[in-house]
Length: 159
Image (tube, one colour):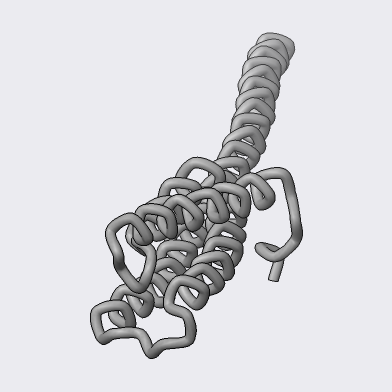
């Protein structure tokens, strides 16, 4: 999958994911919650995806998810997560890939629209060239008709 190839935007997305995951963990620790605020990471995945692209969103999701999981396990100290924490983490695990997919689909659609526009312009240029060629051929036929009528008139005078 080409989204896994590291680029500048992917690394920026990963750094954003790590930073937001650490921020979410710090805020979750202050609020005495077992699991960090995953909604911050979901929002950061969405925003980085919209600004930097699907590759940055995917890398942010992967890096942020890893940091989030490690900090959650560290904060929880081996205890079982509560139902609310599992629901929040599941929302992150399910929601963020959906966001990445939607951003990727939008990028693909935009690329296809660009290709269609380029093809349309190429066809338009070919049609314009063909129209000019047909116009020149019509002028040649008109000139030949005028010449033929002049020749017919001259032959009538001679006969």
